[in-house]
Image: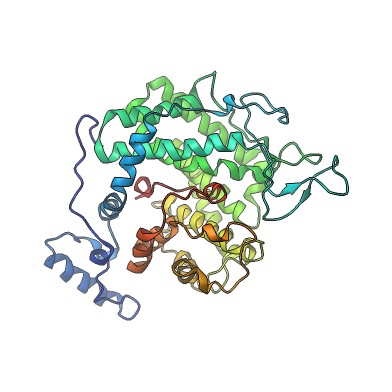
Length: 423
């Protein structure tokens, strides 16, 4: 564990080309020759790549991301040191059936019916209603941006001020009786005249995934014992609600990206609280259900391609899938490299999407009805798949993409912003 009273030393720079030498084509040589070539390269570079015969080590991946994101992280960390935590209790909506501590949001794609303006809302898939109440979402997204950035700054520098500030957000959201959020989503993505809350709303707490990841690194260093107990209790209660409530079980069994998002949340929340049983269950869910049911033979996500925003949803589901595989590393078979008997897996999904992330003009499917021009942005899936699948070109493209989108719709579907916390 890094000390918090002195700067953390970052090892010498490491690049995708040094992890994956350009003279080596892993698609055209067998495993033995690849390992031999890696060993020779490692020896000739002073041992920097020692151990890379089976893929990049954790320290190598950390160094790569640290080098890429150091300036960005420290700039964000300095900015967010001045931001006080703001939770949902600061925003009350008269549309919410819950209390001031209950998260509330409205379904994005539902609008007033022109034929019955005062009646139940109707669906317009892919078109977000700007009149919805979104303040709770905005507050949670701000948490998901600020707290992990502060944690990353603490990891890079060891400076206590960043860790303390990160944990102030944890105190406000999950510990303080005055400002904490209740650990459920009973009133998320409701539809006027139809429902006060729906299972689909559980996707809103996808923005707590990286918060939980950051908390697993920083919380024990700066929270008191009783605060740690309260934090773990919150995530334990919320995970239990996700697993046992009608809304939670329906979301778990969804047929598209919603189930993938449920799984990523369950995996990370369980990781934080040390729930190995749930993590094993999610691992089986991925190998037995999510992967075979959602990924096509060509590596596409057919259910996402059928949407009115096929490009956005394909990228989104790929990023969540890759993050889920990264989250479950160490549980059972290694999911980043796992594939079904027909070859479907993370590497296949990356192979399909990579050309369209590199050059959007080649996208052969319909354009998204909204926000198409705001994509692509930096895809964490490219990084995770690049490292796992030994594809330097994926990592190189990841480094060039925009890591901090400003389009609100894109931000809403962008749960992993600090890959330093994941490698």
